[in-house]
Length: 137
Image (cartoon, rainbow, N blue to C red; front, side, top):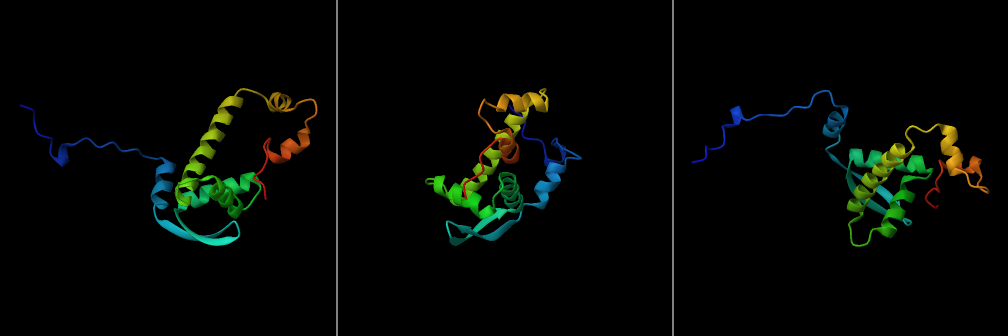
């Protein structure tokens, strides 16, 4: 006969200490409602603090404002809710940044720029854009 589950006091607990990501996660659990212009219309969205901060960082990195990011995601979201689509977009965006970082690890800046530059490319423009086209205005 199998022994019953041990009492709560005897269960093993895994504790991860000194992890700033966990502290940030605890601080950003509360949902926040923000008004955002989506295709010229004011819309209220409820996301967690860390999700809003992630979207602001993406907008800053892409050289546009938060409304432009939200409008672009709204155009492409299909049947997914806008809040859900924004969450998925932020995860995919940062995952792609991590992949790109791993792809260029071990190469010098000169080697990366040479690989990006084709015979008719404008390296200066690529540097300003970070090698990518910003989200259209």
